[in-house]
Length: 118
Image (cartoon, rainbow, N blue to C red; front, side, top):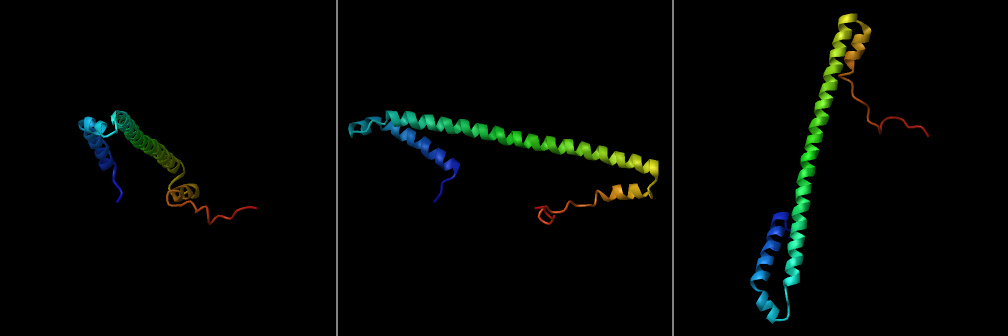
């Protein structure tokens, strides 16, 4: 059975509490848990810091995706406005205009179907 992040964190946190509450008992039995408590606290803190960085990175990735989409939308709008301008200049039945308007409907061929040169 694999534990998720929350259960792992809860386990370590509870273990620290148990070790702290039973330090004298464990020490009397030959195991001083002081160093282990310090180590576990440090490791949990490091995990918390890493998780914080992960959350920041996910937010930055979402921001970057939004920026990329927004800037692409601007470029697409500008391109469409250019098509409208050319259509106004040449007329909607001009062959160049008809070819340009096909660009929206065209799909780029898959790279695996394109012939390669040796």
